[in-house]
Amino acid sequence: MNFNYLYSIFFLVFISSCTPSSSDPEPEVSIEDPVAATLIFPDDNTECNEGTVLSDTESKVVFLWDTSEYTDSYQVVLKNMLTDSIVNFDAFTNSKEIILERGVSYQWNVISKSIISENTASSETFQFFNAAPGEVNHVPFSAEAIAPENNSLVTADEGNVNLEWQAIDIDDDIKDYEVFFGTQDGSLLSQGITNSSSLVVDVISGNKYFWKVKTNDEKGNSSISEIFQFTVQ
Image (cartoon, rainbow, N blue to C red; front, top):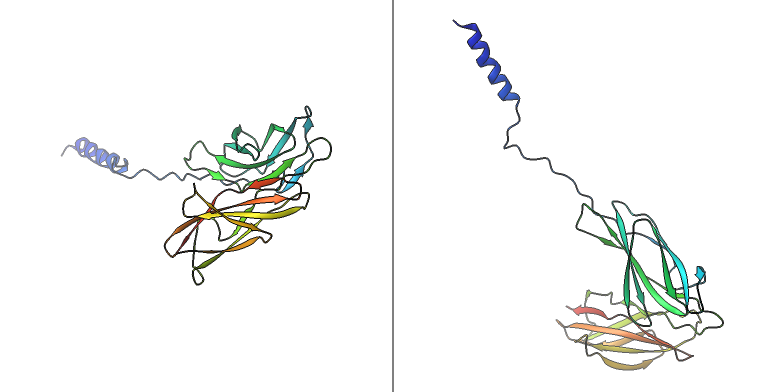
């Protein structure tokens, strides 16, 4: 018997048994989505007196937030509450220096991004007033919905839903509110003026409703909230 021949056959069988099959599944790669950042400064519902004054109309403020996990870059979303204009700023650290108008209220939030994940994460949204020179009558911060929660499903109480909101004014001189309500977000009807921060409205089961709040202060300043919505089950 040819022992060299048998040895060759044995060696080939051994090698083939040690070679991974091309049909074996590839190991799954775990991709972690970015985590939402925690905002630090400017703080929520405050007057921002810090920063570098550039002129009577502009100042430079450093926005700060906590570093978030699985994040490669950030986007600061800044809304001018006077003009409703929104500007985005890219950042690769947990801070961004931005030039602001003085005597204007702003909203801001931070979006966390990753180069290996298509998903993003958004922080909560803060409001603040950028201080102006001299004595200023501050515009109220836009109202925030308490109940029903935005985009929620609610149960009516004998055909009624109680709208509740909260608004803050640095001058603490809020005078009254005007609530706008309806089934079409582009044509909300005024429900009149109220001194209360709640209002009962009539609803029908199965309908989606939209509402917003105009906040007025004693100096004639006012702000309008975003449009909230809920569905009655």
